[in-house]
Length: 131
Image (tube, rainbow, N blue to C red; front, side):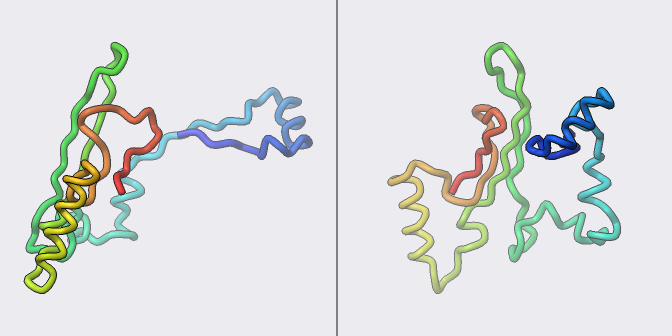
């Protein structure tokens, strides 16, 4: 990861960096396991349950990972999905869910659920959350 050492609008700080012959970028490594799976933040049970869609009977998120070729470069991609029917469908609101799914798919051409990522193409770090 990279971070800026000083605000680029701060001319005094930028001058000091230039005088010390330093760049305004600091590079560092941060292990994902140290941040997400920090034992002080999540219990072992919570970590094991991350794969399940909340408030379902242990239904797992649909996860896919792979790579796509974009401009003769293999780009890693990931996709995570949770269909509306999995976690919203109840007897009381069944028709509302059917209407929501029909609207998403037929009128907007979108995935009928929550989804991030895409297995079909890279996003050039622009983000690819679907509303």
